[in-house]
Image (cartoon, rainbow, N blue to C red):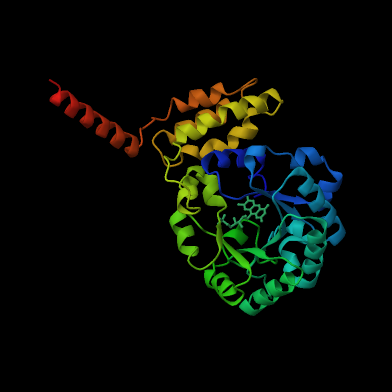
Amino acid sequence: MMARTDRHCRYLLRQVSARTLLYSEMIHANAVLRGDTARLLAFAEAEHPVGLQLGGAEPDALARAAEVGQAFGYDEINLNVGCPSPRVRKGRFGAALMETPGLVADCARAMIRAVDVPVTVKCRIGIDGRGSYEDLRAFVETVATAGVQSFAVHARIAVLDGLSPAENREIPPLRYDAVYRLKQELQMLEVVINGGVASLDEADAHLELVDGAMIGRAAYADPAMLRAADRRIFGGPARAEPSRHDIARAMLPYVRRMCADGVPLHHVTRHMLGLFAGQPGGRSWRRALGEGSHRPGAGGEVIEEALTLVPERTSPLDVGLRDAARVRQDRATAHAP
Ligand SMILES: Cc1cc2nc3c(=O)[nH]c(=O)nc-3n(C[C@H](O)[C@H](O)[C@H](O)COP(=O)(O)O)c2cc1C
């Protein structure tokens, strides 16, 4: 998500879940090729697995940008065919590309030839004027002929004429059935559903019918919602999940490293504002972190101070284990001679 899932945000999310696949913001192929590439693409080893999302509509530029992304170590290159912003539309990429499936196939083919990592596509279920299920299926089939095997589908159309980007994430109704049907009819493809997934319970329910669930806004607003993902979605071991405090503390060495490199503290902490969303003290945390991070010379101590404003509760599991240990100890004492 633009202005959201930069490297700092992804590093935070990685402290929450080790297995979830994370994505960059959309970066235009030309920015990768002509911009400050290291600043745009550099990321920490700890962020893996991470996909680079590219925008653009020129096969050659996308292929070269994909190559650069692979060289930087991204695990996947994703092509954006879903962004409805007027600027993007003017550049004739993003969601506007759903009008020209053949061009998307050409772009994808060039990218696939250029890299070894998977090339995937994120699209909408349609755009105004091309909003039927048949249009979606024809689009996906055409792009799949280029070798794309995985599609993330935002389950609402983008209205390119008349709605703002924000409205385009709310107003067109969600049509999950179109994404389910796509998977049912094109079994050989990986289909990932996106749009309005608000919890791991909902993700789990979608996974009965599709291969993956992509969560955007809900995970940004409340990163801790992903805590159970490794166990519930990826079948990892049932070890204790990190508390919100653990997650914040795990960010401290990273924050100190970034500050030492000259990164303003708020570039990192702005993604942490929602860490205590809906929790007692959550607002104080948000305020203290938001305000404190802009102080000149601010560093990790701002996080430590903000943490004192949110009560740290021991998880029920910890309490249970402690109680069990105490009972055992009491019994042992009772039986002592
Ligand atoms: C601020 C913001 C920026 C976004 N930027 C991108 C982007 O760069 N690339 C993309 O594929 N989708 C982008 N999206 C769309 C989300 O990835 C997602 O498709 C959409 O929000 C619906 O999913 P959600 O309900 O889980 O958020 C953005 C959404 C928001 C709110």
